[in-house]
Amino acid sequence: MAKYRISGVWKDDNNVITHYAFHTVNEKSTTRASKKSKADAIKLLENKANSAVTWTWNYNTSGWDIGSNVEVVHGSN
Image (tube, rainbow, N blue to C red; front, side, top):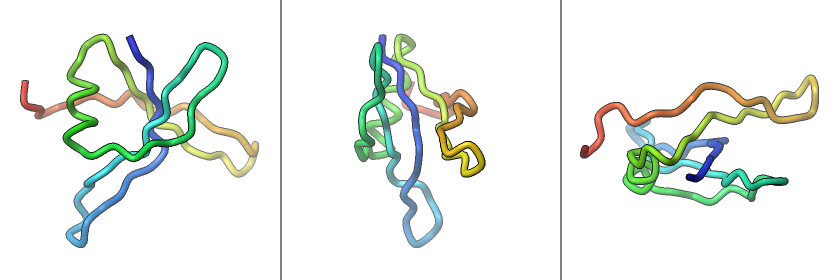
């Protein structure tokens, strides 16, 4: 089971998301972001053993806030 945090997205000229900034949550730390394609993100999150949440920077507290759960709605499965 892997836990992920998503801190950003990349969009194409039509404003459609093409990639995500994925961080892997470890026991005592969280990795730097790695750029995952939309297809790779769907594959990861279609696996019920994996989970992801949004992760946004809070300028007031100078820290990260955990946001909403991320789920695949219309994936290949």
